Length: 302
Image 1 (tube, rainbow, N blue to C red):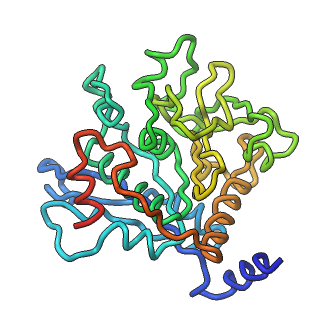
Image 2: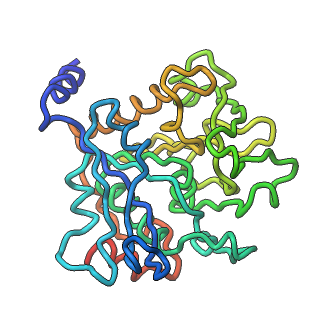
Image 3: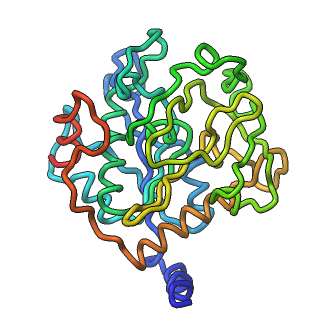
């Protein structure tokens, strides 16, 4: 009861509003680009910021602190200490080298630089005990960060796969999911065994990371569509969806309502704010980094 009153009180002031970090998307330096020629851009997509703001949260993009123009001493760990949680954005493919594979096609090489930043960001918030939520690429990155692997291309590598990405239809490409009974997701949608979601990805979870569980599968081809870290002593909240809940149209019944997912994440952030877990007392490097450990550490600690 005390927690409930504390959370209500926090929402009534600007200072008490939840501050949610959002990982940056990258547009790397390009001499052929007419705007910001040969400059690296870090940005966020509008829908996901508005999704978080719809519940009263303050949204802060967490920029990558390294690069040719880097200066100052701000660290990702500073953001993790200051903010109440983080959302891992959608976007570019995950580089197969991040999970120990060689790209099967040049088109599937992904964004290695963004992977390094994202892995460091996940580690910073996990070490700080702050909730993490992933969307699309964010789900894939979280799975890789904790030891899982991906299909580089679902249609090419998964028998009888659905078309999980249609470049023409984009966010109007839909398919059904089956929600796993007994999971937290099933409790957020009581009585719902089957739902419809958007599908804008061609990579997906192949081997699930240890310590995680699948909360929803695509129907009928059985590709993980929602994952969550299992409850355990000292474990902070980490959950993710392969679909984009922020693309759900308010009031529409065509796809699953995103409200319960957002409220669940923000409740976890508010709970952690009232009753912080405190930083983990473990050595860095528990999150997968392969040969990129030094650069990852630079992102965290420079």
